[in-house]
Structure formats: structure tokens, C-alpha cells
Figure 1 (cartoon, rainbow, N blue to C red):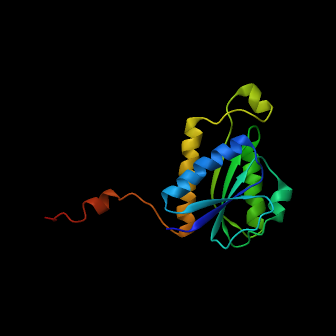
Figure 2: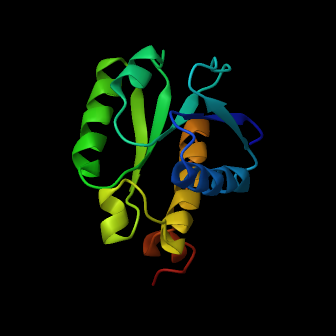
Figure 3: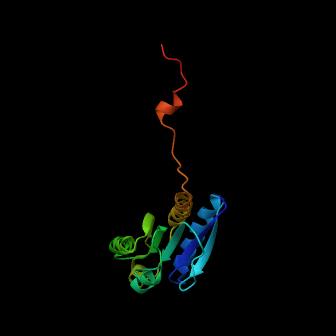
Length: 159
């Protein structure tokens, strides 16, 4: 696969940028290239888009024309992130998008979380890279699966 995968950001936040860099690394593992786009930039022709979001931004989501596209949502948020991810997914699906993959990353640090800051752990960044790889594969229609025990022994002689 050598297609470009657009990654549309709604914020220039440092944590979101850090997570998106890991997502781009994961996309690169598939042979595709992540193309970073800021809010307002037009989407190139593509089969899928990764949305990098810092919190729920309804105005940003409403301006996008994602009808019929495969979408992967990366949400970096503390607090009510799960509820917001559900709301974002519902809003995009109501607009005709096909949500293929989601990932919620919550910054660490109790006091900093309350201020909307914090840090992403190394495991969060590894999860983000895996998310990018899975999303790029989903957009390209590539299915990755482990062989079952039945497949492994299929060539054995039966008595």
C-alpha cells in the first residue's frame, strides 16, 4: 500500500501533536504516508480520514464533509472523554461517515488533568501507533488475522 492517509487536526495542542506523530509512525508501517491537515484545509481524494481531536468540537465536525468516507477518531481528552467519543461517533455517523476505529487517550497527572494538560505515557503512544496502523489497513481494505489451530493442522494426514 502506498496511498496517503489524511490526518485532520482540530487543534495545535502539544499532546495531540505528540499522539498524531505516533499515529503517523503507525500509518508509515503499512507503506502509506500520513498527511497532516489543519482545520479548514481541504481533504484530498481518499477512502478514509483519521481525525485527531482535542475534546469535542461540534463546529469543527459540522464543517467537514465526510459522507461515505471511512473515519478513525483519535481523541485526546481528560474527564468526560468516553461520553464525548460516543457523541462524536454518533454525530459523524448521522452525517453519513463510516466510523471504523476509535482511540481515546487520557493524559496522566491528576492535577494537570483538571487543567486540561498532563502527559501521555509511553503505552499511550504505542497504542496510538497501533491505531494508525490498524486504521490505514482498514482504509485500504487489508484484513490482518491470526491463523487458527484448524488452519495450522489442515495439511496433516488424517487416519
